Length: 534
Ligand code: FRU
Image (tube, rainbow, N blue to C red):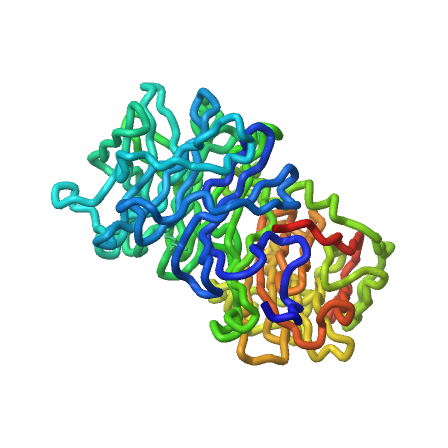
């Protein structure tokens, strides 16, 4: 490993070295959190995939263990790809994962703990019956597009169900299998759901959410007060999309709510980088937790040089918004234990063209919360109805482009002379009698090194700025900036590689580059303690 490592994170999950991609089989067992991930033991690029394994008592500090699953059987000899854990009613965990067989076909396998009294679950035994599901000429499943089993759920008939991501030509599929004993699986006639012209559905996730509370529910829960979420990772665009809908238990089909679409114009967990995500139900704290992989925005050469690639987002609590139309996401409360040395700023008016430094914290490893109240909307520019693409709007109107109401927000990982900064901000536009809020994460000035992907991200935020405060939280960790707008209505994660704004040289500012002034009602920032990770 290179000795100078300004981009390694202080409190985001990553292995000590090499390549990491998808989160796999997250679960809680005997009060201990387990996390597995796609890992290359031999380098900083994708390949030789095994399931690496770590455990934690708080989802923040992690202990590494030996690989849980690595190629050993014909059914997985060419790779142990993504999969999920299911906790059976007797408390026993089982893992379903995709194996790559000697013909490079994608098949589904099962592994069970060797010793259930070991809370660390160090040893996993693969079933001799593997593969349990495989593409055949009879079922006409595409052998190179059949992967990533979900957590299974049990129906009222006692049978288990699981879905596997697939496609037929351009049609994305969630192939459904059923089983009485978890070992012998039968493919259902119809997929749980399919989508026209989306391409391959990777890493599906299917889970219930409560209609009237933020409490999480077990994947097999049956109740009238549930909605369902189907998440797909679209291989074509490398984004995670989800819909909210109903699960028809008679037909075993999922029907997205009206207006909810599972394609490129649908809802995303994150409007920056966030892929191959998966949730699990934490029965110790009755919450549903989301893990997502954040890849690098640097070149492959850069990854090889630094000796690693990939981090995981801070696990997020997910629940249904009151509107029923979208999910809310918020970093797990445990991460707040890392907060040290608070730097507060009393509420004040942020005049147009002003910028104030948030001092007294380690700005390269921090947690910041800021909120705004707007009382004067006269300066808001008129929204153009042709602006249907918020990301494009954010890139055309980056942080350096002066507006009416906005841009205002945070400049993070900024160098002293502002040669480098990442800007996370809002703009407010007038649309007839209402207002439209745009949230952006602008990476265009994040680094003087032009070898990185500095794409700007953005989304519209469903907040009414006349009656509600406008809040933003950013988790800053050397090369990652995870931002949450409107209390978790919009999340945007970015990877950045400053050359000047590193470690003690990084600064943090609140800014307003619009002509209209905005009220900054709160600003709280903390340095973050380094977590013990692997
Ligand atoms: C998603 C993915 C999965 C596959 C795994 C292989 O990133 O391509 O579909 O199982 O990664 O590492």
